[in-house]
Structures are given as C-alpha cells and as structure tokens.
Length: 479
Image 1 (cartoon, rainbow, N blue to C red):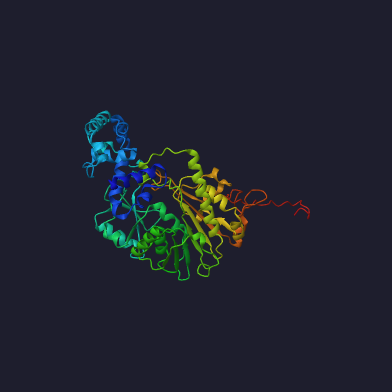
Image 2: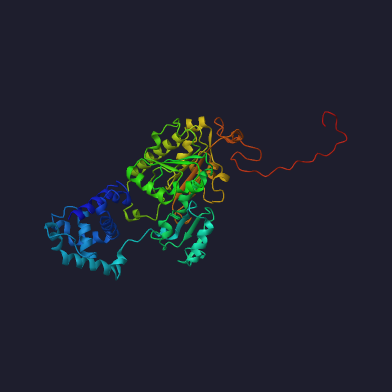
C-alpha cells in the first residue's frame, strides 16, 4: 500500500496548495516517481466522477479504515478504471472490495446520466486554450543554421503552412527568426534532433526575454541569467552570442541546478558557467561580475499564464485574500531582484519577465522599479517600443501604469489569443545623455519631451513653417 500512500501524500499537498503538480511530483523518490505521477494525474482527471461515485456508495461513512478522501480516490480509481487495486490483501484493500458491486453500479449510473459510452469521455480534458498553441521548437544555432533546419524539416515531409490546420504543416515565426511552429500533436521528445541538442522545445513567448535582451556576440560580452533553470533561456542567450563571451547562469536549488547543467550540455553551450548560488547573494562589486552588461531576470511567479500544463486539473477555487497575499509576496521578491540587478556598475540592459497575467506581478512591479533609488541613481529608463519587439501588437495595460504611455514599453502575451502562453516582458536601459530629455518630470508628473513628441511621448506630425509675406510697410522693428 506504500505506493498508494505516496500518491495520497501528493494529493494532500496539492489540496493544501503547497505547489504545482509537476513541482510536488518532482519531490517523490525517483524510483516511485513515474508510477506515482501516472496515478495522481489519472485520478485528478476523473476526480469529479470518482467523488460522485464514492459519495453515492457511502464508502467513507461505512468504512472507517478509509480515513481520507484522497485515499478513497486513488483506490477507487484503480478498482474502476485500472487493473484493480495493486496491493496485497490487507484491511484497507478489503474495505474497498466489500463495496465493489455498489461502486461499479454507481459508476454505471454516472455514465448513463452523462450520456457517455466510454470511460475516457468522463475524463477532464486539457485547457481548451492549449489547443490554440502550436508546438514550438527553437533552432539551436550553436549546432546548425536555421536554413539547414528548414531544409531538414521539409525533407521529413513537413510543408510550410498553418500548423494548426494540418499535422504536417509548419511555419517560421514572424518575430523570432530561429523559431518554428508545428501542430500541437507533433512530438519531438524522442526525435534525434532534440536528443542531440539541435532543437530546443520552447514556447514562443519564452523566447522573447533573450531576444529583447540581445547581448552582443563578442568575446568581451558578460551576461547574467539570474534564475536560469531549466535552461531554455540560457541556451537562447548562448545561441544569440554565438558561444562567445561569458554567461553566468544562476540557480540556487540543487536539483534544478543539476537539470540546468544537463540542459546546457545538451545544447552545446560552451560559454556558460552554471553557478549553484542565489543571485541576490552575489555582490555587484565582485571582480568576477563587475563587467556584467546584460542581465536577464525571469524570477519565480504565479505561473498564471501557463495553460498547457497539468495544473488545469486542479480545482481553481481559491480564497481571494490568499491569492492577493501570495501575489504581493511574489511581487515584492520580483522587485527586489530588479533593484539588485540595477546595482551592477556596468549593466546597460536588464530584461524582467514573468509567465504571469496579473498586473501585480507585471505592470505594478515595473512602475515601482523605475521609481526606486537604484533606478534613479543608475539612471535607468524603460525601453521604448522600438527597442522591445516593436511589431508585437499586444502591449501593457495603460491604466496599470503611472503614465499610460509607458504601457507601450512593455509586452504582453495572452493565452488563447496570441498562440502562446501568457507572458510579460519589460526592458530597463541605462540612459545616455541624449535620453535625459525624455525622463519623467518629478515635479509636474508630466513627461519632458523631445522635439516632435507630445507629453505622452508619442510622435506628432511635423509642423510646416509658414512663409512670411513681405510687408513693404513694415518698420525696421517689425522685420
């Protein structure tokens, strides 16, 4: 029965909102992990139906040995939907088997009531928005070129077209040139291209941070990825830099650090040094990091923008106060990360991103960051639209910013609408002398403008100079 107790422990933690499905399952001992994950996920898929059957059969009322609902769920799942309860005869197993006929009868009634013929029709399906997100793969340019990848996919029978319309169609992305979109049904995890590191499985929105940071491909370039695991963004930085310069990839968690190193090895990242430390503990004055010019910040967030993952199986009914408290704690941590990054003396560009849809973690963090002492002392400004995916249509939420025009300086992705997961990206740039003209006026609260811009920083039509008519009667003082 230990296997079932392990699954119950996972379900109990999920009920207590102690983490995501993926995160909690990762803490299960490796020898039991795969089996436990399968039972937990399948039980969650049928949870609503199983609860109906358990209540109708009055299992928990009549059997005191079944002392938790989650224990009843996993045992009844295997009794009705698998090959039976996989445990030796014991009091708990026998307690369920005594009610086998009643449980099967109630299960049949549920199927009739719902008008289904197969068990699979009773399962909770994936988040519907996930179906609108293609399978994205990024060409790893440390190994080969985009042109070579294009030819390879075409030789495998894929044809250029809308990937959501056909399983054999694929498309080169309009915003990230090294990204290709395939039909969601296509799997690459066993593909030799993936196993050899030639392609990286990465959502489109997740490619935006490294693309916006745009570190130079130079031997003297020094970059930090502050929260690097599992390593997709780090490997993207490496590819953009053509394996030149240096990338310091920080990950404080030991297990995730191991995952990071495996990913970087597979991606052939020779310019990356993985560091098993907390970025916040690193001194900006350390000679090792004093030359850092680019920093990527993708810290812990609510993950509310991710729709193609397992957590759609969980009950989403949460107390608003608990949600608010958690979001505020996350936002405080996120702001702390930005402020620390701004203290690095040579840093010129900082990208802050989240996979959240909440303004508390996005616009609110950015608007507070730009007002901090670190931003003022370091003379940082928000990147302008032309510096941060200028052709991407979805920008920030104006009413969530101190100055509505600043919403143009950040990027949002909406799940179900943009063919990506939900995401947010912003850019902080250290100002040059010619940037000073567009800084916020602390006195008036209005934006100082450059020639040809209004107070919101928007371009204005050029004014034509009026030709003065000659006035023969004009006095010298009037001319």
